[in-house]
Image (cartoon, rainbow, N blue to C red):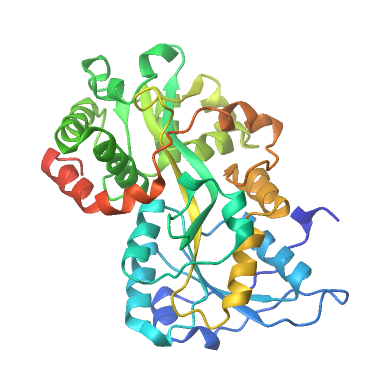
Length: 358
């Protein structure tokens, strides 16, 4: 049976965020989704996750099918997850935490909320720049933060570097979401690491001057604005573009007819990328199950689901990539270790505030 059909039930009840934060994880009830021929009950893994994609539910179901380990999960924003883990301290039931941003995952690691995961499989599968140098977290999917552009008005060579997005060429012609967005924070963090704060500040100031409208909406809204002629270029994550390009919605297909995806380069070394990452919680009560779950996220089965369903690029060495994504996935990636994003995030936020990027 295709993996995409395995999951047809949600694994947890729909608790409101306030209720989730006031109850221990053990109080959450859910279906374990095991078939009659699944392995014997091998216990649980308690997951705190900031992701909310259907692909993840399919992967959790497949993990239980393969191992007999039940996944008990709570979803919450990354910032609230970090605060909750701090408040729970040694009593935290969390085994694995998942965050869709290397910068936020780095903050969790530096706050002492993670511990190293001893796994040769994780180390061998996940390239060094997509994981923590102390092996406290590992990226299991990646996405490029690149540029959607109007192919009737913009030539590809006009957007082949990030510097060009801040040039007078695009004055009043750029769309982007707000400065609170973690993907923008991590992008600017990488620029600070590459260029230093002064040059990064000038870039951010140039982007603000080029905005066609005040920052608003998500990445999909920026792409739609390009298709509607409201701007010529927009900063977006690659998987939003791929999702719209393959949409069954006629309106989306019409919008995408003239929109293309460009991959600007950082100092000639490749485009800025970010990851969704899994980390081993500092006080994981089910440590062996947690490491097995993290390993499963990087195996071929799970990597294929993330690519097919969510349009994310695999991180595991040798993982298969759907044909429609191969050209994009093969584009050069900035080799800067993503562990550099976290320490620069506070500085990035100060720069955003200083230049008026709201």
